[in-house]
Length: 301
Image (tube, rainbow, N blue to C red; front, side, top):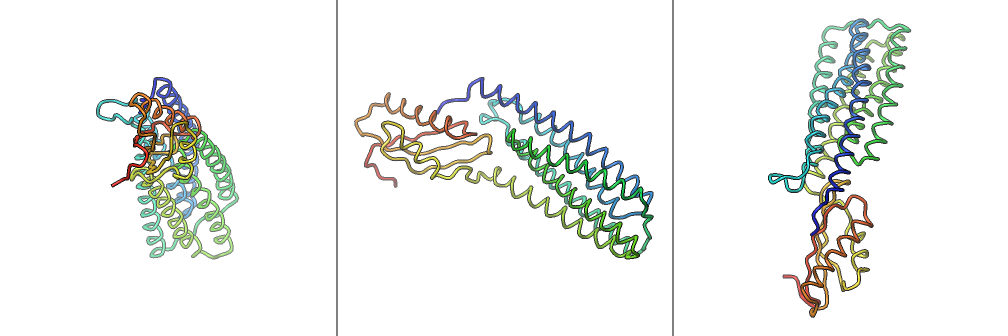
């Protein structure tokens, strides 16, 4: 097994720095959007617009959580965390899901209060203008964050983009609700509040599901992708018992290979290095490979 060098750590630190920069940019836009929706939502007595504003505010809070998580994830491996701190970034995505569920509860509480004490929202041209402008900002934020998340291989940015995507759907629902109120369908405001809560809860589920895949060590790479590459290495008779875990940008692989029984320990050691380098150069994200060398004909218990 070859330990990661200073080059890998430098690349990781640079990636974390770029992720933090993206988060600061997203945080600014999210707070501006949330402020506009909440303030005008209260002025206009629009439940759906206010709920949408709080949803956007949770986006900003998740950005702050992300900045903390990414800062921890940028630390190099140490004695207590020999595999590094990258999973802390994934762990913080669970915080986003918790925020979303809290917002979902708040929205449903507002719907119940509005059903018991109906209030007619004040829908005007300003209402539509605020929603259309904030919708455009949300589309930009989602597109930019998702692109950067995939480009940098950041679990947090991708999860946070899911959060922002739900903002877009929510904003479209709010606009539809404003149209309904203008037509006299007052019930549509709180009905869409329930729909918004559903979007928020679904976003939370997506984040928890994706985070659990990493935190519970689900397979990252298919064995069928790894075995042919290993079998091409000179001296390898057969590759089997392939396992992988980690994140898309930090994949750990362990596998078994059969070799000529007469191969020396030194040759087997060189072979394991060749297998590791072959996988690292061929598969993006592979950072470590553990090779178990067995004599040809040996049977697994």
